[in-house]
Length: 190
Image 1 (cartoon, rainbow, N blue to C red):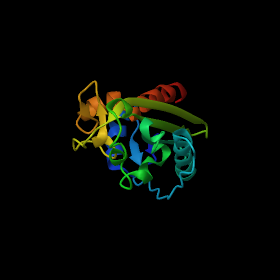
Image 2 (cartoon, rainbow, N blue to C red):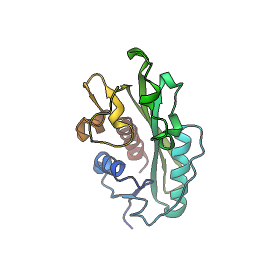
Image 3 (cartoon, rainbow, N blue to C red):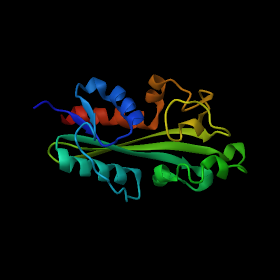
């Protein structure tokens, strides 16, 4: 049986990024749906790494093989680290831009954090993490990416994460960094 990687997500934007980054591993990368898995996974961890592992383990129990999952989010210093692990549930409720109306420029610091968890065919587990530093923009800009990308400003590039070409984004993004680190670990183990 050919080895494949199942990535525990149904988000097509995320799957495009993941496939681009992992293509040189030489394994097909399937979404949960493509792997025939339909689960409602409760992410009740207190860290990105815990939530990623909860997802990876739940899908692995259905599929075996190699399963990867991520949990990522936006950490805004002015908001005491919010939305953090609650980023997905937080989006659209009380947006970070609105809550930063009184923040000075130097107080708008934030980072995207991504943890990638893997469960391997033997049940062993791996975790990597990546971050990218930036600022919360005053206005959303760009229509690339998804989630918080339009409000995450990258000062060194002068654009938001939603305005940067996907190839460049994958090089510098939190998920890209965590996936690159995971590729190194996978190559050592597989």
